[in-house]
Length: 378
Image 1: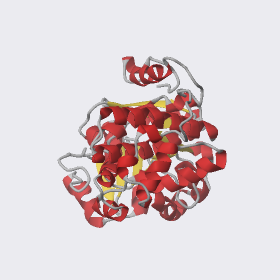
Image 2: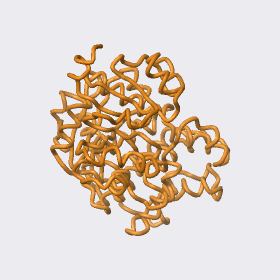
Image 3: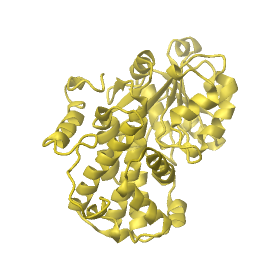
Image 4: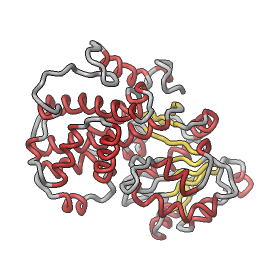
């Protein structure tokens, strides 16, 4: 491609070339953008640049010719109209120190592709970005949803939510991050969107544990359902809208992550359920399972606002080695033996078809070009 042709295409940068970062780069390139990936390792950048492959993280996937890569951060960010960050959550702050001087004189959108909270501070990724880059919150967007990287890299249709406190920023990112197999919706509930992506990882670890133990579908369905209650109660306590947790960033992501063997958090939980110690699980994982690092800070945040999270508490006990994985079960997801109402929406008892309405809403967002309920607008 000539330089003149190249300059006519929108330019975006993706910082981080793991499975999700590379997949999102493919999404953007397939949507018409000129994409430059930043890879920490020179050999990985070279493979993406020259072979159009990322054999370590996306084996068997051919990458678009409009995807390029470099291990020089300044080269990746130069001239970018939008910048996407896909870095393990616990390493984000340190990596942003190198990004800051390169973006200090720009006002381009910064998009978080990460689903975690910082262990030391309990901050969401958008908050870490705001702190370290000293940028206007309206420039920051987050992407979330049922997005298993390998499935999307294989161009299997899915949807995601782009969220920003600025409707303009959310719309701009959503227009760029879409193509024939990847559909984007928008909202302005950053808190709910980010916490949905964080909390579903913790429930997925629990599902992996019971799967590793050998429990069946009833157990998993019970934990998923009660897990959605915990997710909603927690997020709403921090200012989220409950409907966000019933959409793609909450229920949609929860279903995908809990049921798929492609989920790193599910895999980590399954190893724990099979009797592996926490340190051994970490060693066996080729990629970061964000849920493992987020358990402790999420529980600390929950205690600060008085939200009970019995499923997540049990996950922590398994991680700490103080609970036998066989003991994590739905009958342990209440605090005591006192009969309680089944809370289905933001801590409210009853509700009848509330869970079905949540499921229906998520399905509607995949149908009819998004012309279902309007919580996450296309």
